[in-house]
Amino acid sequence: MLNDKAEALAVQQVGGVDDVSLRRLLQSAGACASDAEAGGQGPKGFAAAHGVDLGAAFAQEAQHMHVGVGLLGVTHGVEGAQLGQLASDGAGIHDPKWGAELLGELAKAGVGDVGVHAASMPTAGHIRNYHVGRTCFIPDMPITHRQVEIFRAVMQAGSLSGAAQALHSSQPTLSRELGRMEMRLGYALFERSAGSRLKPSAAAQALWDSVQRHYRGLAQVQAQARQLALADAQQLQLLALPALAHALLPSALARWPERVQRVAITPAESPLLEAWMAEQRFDLAVTERTGPVSGCAVEPLAELAEVAVLPAGHALLAKRVLHPQDFAGEAFISLADEDPYRAAIDALFTQADVQRHLRLQTHSAVGACALVAQGLGVTIVNPFTAMACEGPALQWRPLSVRIPYSLALLRPLHRPGARGVDALAQALRDEALRLNDHSLAEQREKQ
Image (cartoon, rainbow, N blue to C red; front, side, top):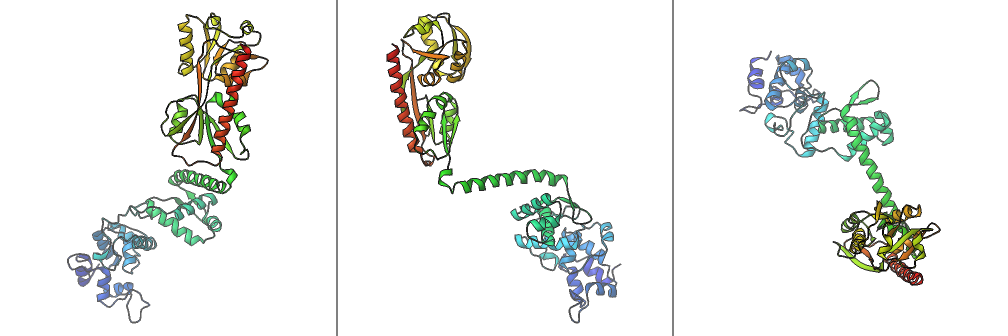
């Protein structure tokens, strides 16, 4: 138990009105912070000589200042050896070593003053202690990239020694940083066992998934950054309707002088194609839409007419030009309901009072031609697709009634221009003009 002087100063008035802390109590009786200091009496020696119960004094001061006894002991230069007694006194218990690390974290963060008496200690508003193993939780202090790197290395190696070797560091350094990381998180990441092996906690396993995703994304960023250093590695992003990716783009790319450059062709139907271009996601697009598109410059490429496509050997191939009435009763392969050309074709036959046998429909003109080639019916599609698909199993004929088919080039207004995009746009113009002339010539010949 405490003697009268110790009780009056160390228990009742610690951090109180007179702002007398345990260290000041010990120093007032001639005790120095260390036995090694000349002429001084260490705190333990003073306590033994004067009958001061350090456990009770530490417990009282810790409760008053809302800090752990280990942290308090480090602050006042006294090692708390009676942890069992302190626990029974209701004081927060933290290992002195971890308390020292916590003081260092607080000093780095500029939180409070880590002086030697109660009034200058961090207040309860600045620090809260959570009894999770030996871990202190420091609010609002994010973990660092270095700590995440160390955590990753430990998870990969399974031990501190392996992680230290991988990071060209030392085990004590890594152990200290892991401890700081756990203090900032407020929970333990590993179970310490004999030797250097560490067993990850459930929280560590969950965090590991996020860390792996982070490093995979970082690796992709690094790979792309290296690729961009190579001029011919910059990929040009090209967007087109599926039918035009099949019928127009291949021949246009053959005309393109920049054949060594990488090109990514993405097929997409309207209105998704126009939405992606409005988001500035592609360098160039070819579409059938000639109206305004948000955030894009629209350039007409060609205007032709739709044509009829028939399987080889069909009776209608005897005619050079087909009229709407020729399709009466025919098995007809339609485009999708939302396709604007489907609406124009249906309107043509409705106006002519012609009933077709609507067996199949598809989103793609190429798909429609493939069905025709199998003898499943006839269809009406754009001339580019019809010419590209023409062969022994399929032929096409012009129509007597014109259904306009238009092409347009879309260029984003707010996306930096990729190398070679101007030359590719010119190649598309040239190829569209050539196919337009070829289509008109064949139509005249068939007529």
